[in-house]
Length: 317
Image 1 (cartoon, helix red, strand yellow):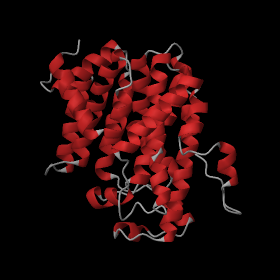
Image 2 (cartoon, rainbow, N blue to C red):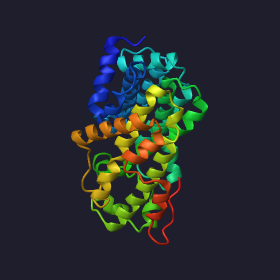
Image 3 (spheres, helix red, strand yellow):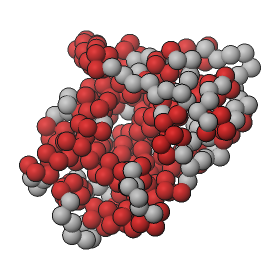
Image 4 (cartoon, rainbow, N blue to C red):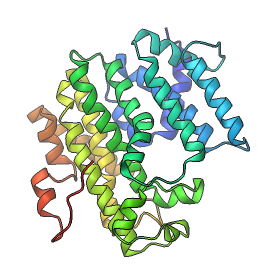
């Protein structure tokens, strides 16, 4: 049983580092909300080893991630309140060891991998860093039909992370020397990675970012279609999270797709407005896809196709 100290520490980490998701998490029923604080804190503890190594060498980072893996899987004792809470949560909700392993493996890959040649390579990374998150969230919600819900949850997790990559192009290169835009997408649009490395925005980089943004929007539509398979008391919070994350696309478009020189951020007022609008439409509809279409900035599949420029290939997964 997760105790108050473990919960308080987990909630504090979530509130400080997951500001967009935190708004949606507050809407979850308590049985899921508290578990979500623990999940998110666990993800951040591992992620911080990679993103903020504080002088650790790559070998030391890998050793620390292995320590986190062993503690999370209950193989080694730990006095870390987040890791001990997660280990208890994993057991009580039957989270497969595989999901922990693929997540930690993705964090290990982040230590040395800073460029991706193809979207397939990036997608393989996101299977651990994002899709595993969706799986674990679905399991703690205790769906009646997890086999149907989980594939959609994986896709929605991928959509969230792709939005983060699109939003943080400049920040990722400046702080971590990483480019998550696939090289094949940059090449297709004539974009030079050296311009990203210099934090110099070009129209070609903008076209590559637009390409990945529209790819992400296809993932949102697929992911949101599966919200109906979640427990009723979890559907609105997950839908709200999708609306909030996707709203970054509005900011990206307003900036002419330039996320190289500055990182766009949703204001608190905008988040509150979107939460209120989503709840209002949910009151009348209770259909996730209908509400998402009304509230979010993601165009419908038909609108997506008509927005393409002449002779432009339609982006696929």
